[in-house]
Amino acid sequence: MAPRSSVTRYIGSLSARLLALTVIFVMVGEVLIFVPSVARFRLNYLQERIKDAHLAILTLDATPDSMPSKELAADLLRHVGAHGIVVHRQSTTLMLDEGAPPPIDESFDLRNASFLTLIGDAMSALGEKGNRIIRIVDASPKEPRPVIEVTIDEAPMRTVMWAYGIRILELSIVISLITAVLLYIALQWLLVTPLRRLTAAMIAFRENPEDASRVVIPAGRDDEMGLAQRELATMQETVRQALRHNARLAALGTAVTKINHDLRNILATARLMSDSLAESEVPEVKRVTPRLLAAIDRAVALCTGTLSFTREDAAPLRPSRFALAGLVEEIAEVIEGKGEDSPRLVNQVAPTLMVEADRDQLFRVVSNLARNAIEAGARQVTIRARRDAGATGIEIADDGPGLPPKARDNLFRPFAGSARPGGTGLGLAIARELMRAHGGDLVLDSSGAGGTIFCLMLPDMPGAVPTARAEPLHEMRPPAAS
Image (cartoon, rainbow, N blue to C red; front, side):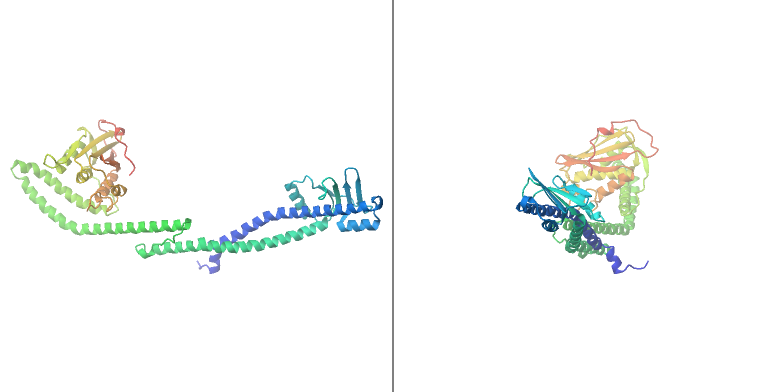
């Protein structure tokens, strides 16, 4: 495709369209003014003929028996531009004519003519081709009682009407061009030029969004253009922050990839030593060793899951059917302390409630939420579960101080939603991703001075066998939108 010329680009530009529309709109406005202006001109023309006719009739009062000579009558009619004049007074009627006046083609009574009637008569007069003999009836402008009739030719009036109309159109064209140019300059200054700068800034930012110098600087205007500039600057800064976060996530993935091999070797060594501990005959060692092995396995899974979070594919699921209460008891043994004043995890899940999910991932989600609550200052974490057709709701409630506003606003955003100093905010983000991989979700129900409540929504896996119905899911507190 051949490149467009500068003239072609200008014709299709916003500036050219604004200029053309301005001229068109001004011309339309002038046409709307032209029609009543011509009608008003015709009315003034006819009223002038009425006034001149009245003055001509007044001269008859100075003649003997109100009978002027033929020469005087012809001069008076020529001065008025009429074929005949008739004045109806209260008691008399005076007449002045040529002796054999031509037949009348149309009569117009100006006394009761409406605005629309005057416009219609004026447009009709402009559209006539030949000459018509018209009679005009109106009251005298000097005396309201006399009624004056004047018979005149329409052609002279049409000629001056066209001349007046042409002057109006010429003036309209000049006014429209001046208005269009001024409006064009104003629009260029207020709208088009700032819009071009805004477009150029967006193009420059698109080429290198990480360059802070390419973020648009608002001009400080209070109108819509200023608002657009401020919103664009905010959006560009948000994009830059998102890119920085993505870069940090990429760096995290790279770092985890590099340490993954060494960490796995360390954990493998710990696993071998733990296996040797499992052969011990000491009862306490035999009791603790399975938990230690499970903790090492979860550490390996945590490393792998953190690496998977930096990738776009969903976490792989290994669903199984298990009792939820047993999972909660296992979490309680891991996070509860040994002292009497240590935080406690209260298990209120029915022993018969069965769920189908990836047990390790669900362990990771629930334990993360419980551990976060304890680290935030909670003394007791209560876990409840309710079941309804096709889904299980798990509620994790604590008596801690609640989440700070910054944590609530960025709750599930990596590196931004941590509620404690030094936290990365990855825990909740990974937990929500794991729940959504199950087809469910993790949401914040409420958070305040009385504690925080998170809700896990866990739908049944396809092909799952229904369990005995426990307490209904809808009796749980409905989760708020996060």
